[in-house]
Length: 192
Image (tube, rainbow, N blue to C red; front, side, top):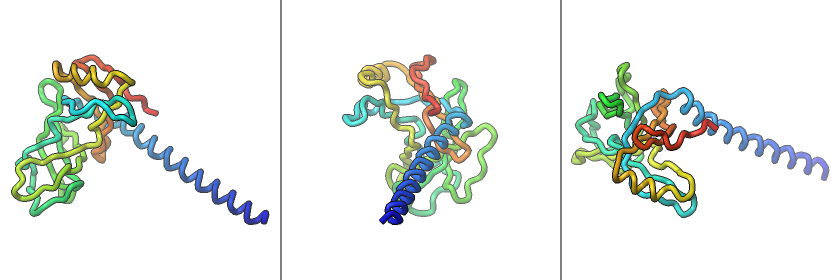
Protein backbone atom coordinates (compact mmCIF):
# COMPACT_ATOMS: atom_id res chain seq x y z
CA UNK A 1 0.00 0.00 0.00
CA UNK A 2 2.88 2.38 0.84
CA UNK A 3 4.47 1.74 -2.56
CA UNK A 4 1.21 2.56 -4.32
CA UNK A 5 0.81 5.79 -2.29
CA UNK A 6 4.41 6.79 -3.04
CA UNK A 7 3.92 6.11 -6.75
CA UNK A 8 0.71 8.16 -6.76
CA UNK A 9 2.47 11.03 -4.96
CA UNK A 10 5.39 10.95 -7.44
CA UNK A 11 2.99 10.97 -10.41
CA UNK A 12 1.00 13.87 -8.93
CA UNK A 13 4.19 15.81 -8.25
CA UNK A 14 5.46 15.21 -11.79
CA UNK A 15 2.11 16.36 -13.26
CA UNK A 16 2.14 19.50 -11.11
CA UNK A 17 5.72 20.33 -12.11
CA UNK A 18 4.85 19.81 -15.78
CA UNK A 19 1.87 22.18 -15.50
CA UNK A 20 3.91 24.82 -13.68
CA UNK A 21 6.66 24.52 -16.30
CA UNK A 22 4.15 24.94 -19.13
CA UNK A 23 2.60 28.04 -17.52
CA UNK A 24 6.05 29.53 -16.88
CA UNK A 25 6.98 28.89 -20.54
CA UNK A 26 3.81 30.67 -21.76
CA UNK A 27 4.42 33.68 -19.50
CA UNK A 28 8.09 33.89 -20.48
CA UNK A 29 7.26 33.66 -24.21
CA UNK A 30 4.88 36.66 -23.89
CA UNK A 31 7.43 38.61 -21.83
CA UNK A 32 10.14 37.93 -24.45
CA UNK A 33 7.95 39.41 -27.19
CA UNK A 34 7.17 42.49 -25.09
CA UNK A 35 10.83 42.96 -24.14
CA UNK A 36 12.58 42.20 -27.43
CA UNK A 37 9.93 42.55 -30.18
CA UNK A 38 9.85 45.30 -32.79
CA UNK A 39 7.45 48.08 -31.83
CA UNK A 40 4.64 48.80 -34.25
CA UNK A 41 2.15 51.66 -33.72
CA UNK A 42 -1.33 50.92 -35.09
CA UNK A 43 -4.43 53.11 -35.17
CA UNK A 44 -7.36 51.29 -33.61
CA UNK A 45 -11.13 51.28 -33.99
CA UNK A 46 -13.57 50.17 -31.25
CA UNK A 47 -15.95 47.27 -31.72
CA UNK A 48 -17.40 46.24 -28.31
CA UNK A 49 -16.57 47.31 -24.72
CA UNK A 50 -17.72 44.54 -22.34
CA UNK A 51 -17.25 40.88 -21.45
CA UNK A 52 -19.55 39.81 -18.62
CA UNK A 53 -17.11 37.18 -17.36
CA UNK A 54 -13.82 39.09 -17.71
CA UNK A 55 -14.82 42.71 -17.15
CA UNK A 56 -14.25 45.75 -19.31
CA UNK A 57 -12.27 45.55 -22.47
CA UNK A 58 -12.04 47.34 -25.75
CA UNK A 59 -12.38 45.11 -28.78
CA UNK A 60 -10.11 46.53 -31.42
CA UNK A 61 -10.05 46.61 -35.19
CA UNK A 62 -7.10 47.83 -37.22
CA UNK A 63 -6.46 49.16 -40.70
CA UNK A 64 -4.52 45.93 -41.23
CA UNK A 65 -7.50 43.71 -40.28
CA UNK A 66 -9.24 43.91 -43.67
CA UNK A 67 -6.90 44.11 -46.65
CA UNK A 68 -7.33 44.01 -50.42
CA UNK A 69 -6.35 40.69 -51.96
CA UNK A 70 -4.12 42.62 -54.39
CA UNK A 71 -1.50 42.99 -51.62
CA UNK A 72 -0.51 39.31 -52.03
CA UNK A 73 2.96 39.04 -53.53
CA UNK A 74 1.83 35.75 -55.08
CA UNK A 75 -1.96 35.32 -55.09
CA UNK A 76 -3.23 32.06 -53.55
CA UNK A 77 -3.83 29.41 -56.20
CA UNK A 78 -7.05 28.14 -54.67
CA UNK A 79 -9.24 28.41 -51.63
CA UNK A 80 -7.84 29.03 -48.15
CA UNK A 81 -9.73 27.86 -45.06
CA UNK A 82 -10.60 29.96 -42.04
CA UNK A 83 -7.60 30.03 -39.70
CA UNK A 84 -5.03 29.79 -42.51
CA UNK A 85 -1.87 31.78 -41.77
CA UNK A 86 -1.09 34.92 -43.77
CA UNK A 87 2.05 37.04 -43.31
CA UNK A 88 1.57 40.81 -43.55
CA UNK A 89 4.49 43.21 -44.04
CA UNK A 90 3.93 46.66 -42.52
CA UNK A 91 6.02 49.82 -42.73
CA UNK A 92 5.90 53.11 -40.86
CA UNK A 93 4.37 56.03 -42.73
CA UNK A 94 5.35 59.70 -42.28
CA UNK A 95 3.27 59.88 -39.05
CA UNK A 96 4.90 56.77 -37.55
CA UNK A 97 1.82 54.60 -38.07
CA UNK A 98 2.43 51.21 -39.60
CA UNK A 99 0.59 50.47 -42.85
CA UNK A 100 0.37 47.23 -44.86
CA UNK A 101 2.63 46.99 -47.90
CA UNK A 102 2.48 43.28 -48.83
CA UNK A 103 0.95 39.92 -47.91
CA UNK A 104 2.40 36.45 -48.32
CA UNK A 105 1.52 32.85 -47.71
CA UNK A 106 4.07 31.27 -45.34
CA UNK A 107 5.37 28.78 -47.90
CA UNK A 108 7.73 30.55 -50.26
CA UNK A 109 7.44 34.00 -48.62
CA UNK A 110 10.39 36.26 -49.42
CA UNK A 111 12.26 37.68 -46.43
CA UNK A 112 10.96 41.08 -45.30
CA UNK A 113 13.03 44.09 -46.32
CA UNK A 114 14.84 46.12 -43.65
CA UNK A 115 12.04 48.75 -43.46
CA UNK A 116 9.28 46.19 -42.85
CA UNK A 117 7.99 44.34 -39.83
CA UNK A 118 6.22 41.06 -40.60
CA UNK A 119 3.03 40.20 -38.70
CA UNK A 120 1.52 36.74 -38.56
CA UNK A 121 -2.25 36.79 -39.03
CA UNK A 122 -4.96 34.15 -39.35
CA UNK A 123 -7.89 34.31 -41.74
CA UNK A 124 -11.15 35.23 -39.96
CA UNK A 125 -13.08 33.65 -42.80
CA UNK A 126 -12.17 31.53 -45.79
CA UNK A 127 -10.60 32.99 -48.90
CA UNK A 128 -11.68 31.95 -52.38
CA UNK A 129 -10.59 33.13 -55.85
CA UNK A 130 -13.76 35.28 -55.98
CA UNK A 131 -12.99 37.04 -52.66
CA UNK A 132 -11.52 40.54 -53.02
CA UNK A 133 -10.87 41.29 -49.30
CA UNK A 134 -8.76 39.37 -46.80
CA UNK A 135 -10.07 39.48 -43.21
CA UNK A 136 -7.39 38.77 -40.60
CA UNK A 137 -6.93 38.54 -36.85
CA UNK A 138 -3.56 38.93 -35.15
CA UNK A 139 -4.31 38.00 -31.54
CA UNK A 140 -4.31 41.66 -30.44
CA UNK A 141 -7.99 42.38 -30.97
CA UNK A 142 -8.87 42.77 -27.26
CA UNK A 143 -7.40 45.02 -24.59
CA UNK A 144 -8.66 44.57 -21.02
CA UNK A 145 -9.13 47.69 -18.92
CA UNK A 146 -9.72 48.45 -15.25
CA UNK A 147 -13.34 47.87 -14.21
CA UNK A 148 -15.69 50.66 -15.26
CA UNK A 149 -13.45 52.26 -17.91
CA UNK A 150 -14.44 50.35 -21.05
CA UNK A 151 -17.58 52.27 -22.00
CA UNK A 152 -15.98 55.69 -21.48
CA UNK A 153 -12.95 54.78 -23.59
CA UNK A 154 -15.16 53.28 -26.30
CA UNK A 155 -17.14 56.55 -26.46
CA UNK A 156 -13.90 58.57 -26.63
CA UNK A 157 -12.57 56.33 -29.41
CA UNK A 158 -15.44 57.45 -31.60
CA UNK A 159 -14.37 61.11 -31.10
CA UNK A 160 -10.56 61.01 -31.37
CA UNK A 161 -7.71 58.74 -32.35
CA UNK A 162 -6.45 55.91 -30.15
CA UNK A 163 -3.43 53.72 -30.86
CA UNK A 164 -1.85 50.48 -29.81
CA UNK A 165 1.88 49.92 -29.55
CA UNK A 166 2.36 46.25 -30.39
CA UNK A 167 5.56 44.30 -29.87
CA UNK A 168 6.20 41.85 -32.72
CA UNK A 169 8.49 38.83 -32.43
CA UNK A 170 10.78 37.62 -35.21
CA UNK A 171 8.13 34.94 -35.94
CA UNK A 172 5.47 37.67 -36.44
CA UNK A 173 3.53 37.10 -33.22
CA UNK A 174 2.16 40.33 -31.76
CA UNK A 175 1.42 41.35 -28.18
CA UNK A 176 -0.13 44.65 -27.08
CA UNK A 177 2.53 46.63 -25.24
CA UNK A 178 0.71 49.92 -24.66
CA UNK A 179 -2.67 51.56 -25.28
CA UNK A 180 -2.62 55.25 -26.19
CA UNK A 181 -5.09 58.13 -26.38
CA UNK A 182 -3.37 60.23 -29.02
CA UNK A 183 0.22 60.56 -27.80
CA UNK A 184 -0.70 59.88 -24.15
CA UNK A 185 -0.07 56.34 -22.94
CA UNK A 186 -3.11 55.25 -20.91
CA UNK A 187 -1.95 51.72 -20.10
CA UNK A 188 1.41 49.98 -20.31
CA UNK A 189 1.46 46.17 -20.16
CA UNK A 190 3.77 44.71 -17.51
CA UNK A 191 6.21 42.01 -18.60
CA UNK A 192 4.89 39.56 -16.00
